[in-house]
Image 1 (cartoon, rainbow, N blue to C red):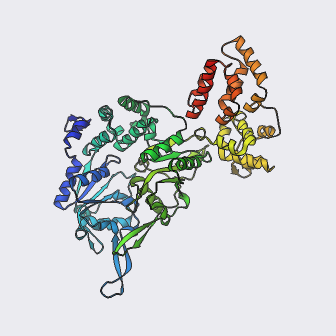
Image 2: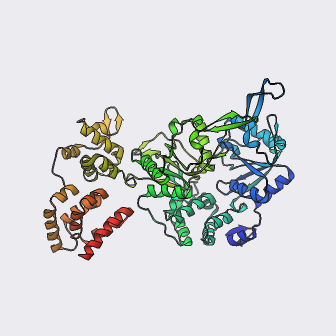
Length: 608
């Protein structure tokens, strides 16, 4: 619901009337008056989106030139370059202006995140705001009919504050809130046939502090995840590795009671959809959704669990070609784009070849929170926010997936950079990935056979949860390789310095490789008659099962799908003798393929 001047209006009524919002009226007035407009407001309330939708609708024939100031480098707007004078034929030094400022039609210039630009850019922006000029170029002569600067004034997200009265005296400034944009109307249209009236009522019932946290942009992401049947919390951003908490600030300024689950459940109830705690195979499912819906997705998980390889494999399968892959620690600005003088006397940008052409594209940003430098990350931010690079739309870009490590893992700090809420809320879905979410075990089995079975049985049965956290899928592969070369297995674990390796005992694994008697699915199948007799004896005494029932249950629960299929007949014999309460657990949280396998097994039992 919309609350303006004490009146409540439904989004349907707002959409039907199409009354201009306060921001839209301000835009029209500034264009008519020829004044520079400065707009401040919280992140994610639809400031930029309002310009994109309103200029095209209310000012036909007028282009919107969007310039993300936080992503600018000093030579992007203006540069001195040698050009040949058409009259004399001599090379002369000219100031070349960015090509976007010569669109060939009347245009409105929108400088977004204007306070986040560096000092040199701030000087250039001051000239634009005050005089509508840039260097030797008159923007009015180029076709400019309006200049606007937007940002959030929060010092946690900006690098400057405007205090120069000579500059402030040249602009008309307005502060806005979420009620001053038409975000409800746009969400109502985007998520038809849902009626979002109840969702807007939930949002309006929250306190101002909670509404700021659950901004319209974040609410949009929550709705997008709800539409796909995903956990709604995936729409909340990850800030410095932690999920945003919807909590009122306490008297001491610290967050109070965490109301996240309650509020998201209310949103789900208003939509009439479930809010699952998790889903099977989450990484593959969210990457596929990103390709379908043109999402930007963030995946955060511990090192070595196989995130990046699974993402690349899933994109390859869904797109039919390799994704564009960039590892941020070694990515320079020049790997993305570079400014060059063009034949028409403007400053153009050459894009990297991979970004051009009509073929479908998806980008994987690996080690996303480990950028090589701020300039490269600034360019990257434009792509993730606007799906453009140096102002040029990337043709047929279908999805972007950023992959990163958390700030802390196993009690140790990782060398990753911090982010703020404005950056974090650019992702439609933000997942925290656990090692069990990555089906790397099947890949190990397919590649390394019985050696992989031995290592996985050790990993599942012989070490505790803390030990499993130290032994990543990458480490498991190293253990197999070192075993095959006859090298000490300790070298495969993480080296912590000063002769110390990860604190995980390897004795049981060494014994397994040497043939110590153990019980896994392979051994269970080899002695199937013996184990079947044990289970029958247990079933005769009680419906609850016994120690033998628990052992067989754990073996089946921990087995990979390929192992279950390999020993399908034995699995069917054993499952039929297990207590019903144990059989029911095999479908809980299982992937679609696992559920199909167990459903076939249970159906076969019923026929018998």
